Image (cartoon, rainbow, N blue to C red; front, side, top):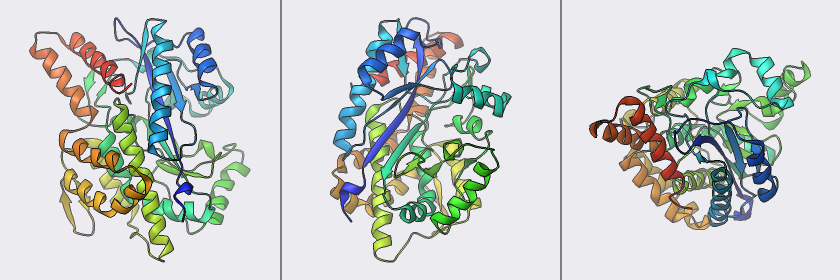
Length: 375
């Protein structure tokens, strides 16, 4: 095993807001042109016209990912500012109405709108995807089954979508309640081999139901375009350093499972019914109510779960040079995610005498500030 195999790529989706009002705004044509000119293929429109997507280059380590992600975030911010806009890295806008949004006029998105009907119109959500390089097909399928156990932990640590259309949903990650209405979402199935995965997905392709596996939107999937395993469950993180900590965790877990595979060992595979229960707990509570440890048959606090994960992957974090990023996870587990901070910003604004609408605007201001913290 060479650590060069565990390359890293991060994709993030942002919402564009008016700096003065906090309202969502469509990306002006000049904004996309300016971003494209400066970022050379690393930026693209997303399904809705108020969204923008970036993707890092293939990075050898977390330090390279930080450098590239900072450049991407800063460039999008600078281009947006020329139009009186700001990007926010959050999975749901606190008060925007999805019915007011329009999808991007692009062949792929026009087909999505036609195929998925009213379900896709509600997709006013953003996420973060983390690619880890694993050149061998069989390894990707083997690790996908084992990695599924930790997908709820990633969601709990990334939750950034407590509000929807001006209402507190009571959830830490409302995004998934919207996304899960699409077909071919959720936890990935268990496959015994890459051939079985291919036979299964080819069935839909041969029937003309999907053109390729980019239309399969599991929480974790083999990438269609790259020799990577792509973790897709995370809410997007307002703070860049939190995003990097989550990406480092995905990278380290992949290396950890690969080490087990080399020793003819593997993580225990649990039924999707049980993992889905943890997925729901992460979606509902984020960091506050703990996740199920199926081996111990107990619900354990997230800080304890994170401490145990850090112990498992200590060797991998050292080898990959991301010990500081992995250490940051303990702070997230203790202090809470963006969902916690957004609710705090709202409560503080209400306590200061602002009405609900003004308090929601304060949440957007908070998100703008957090986007720019580490740039």
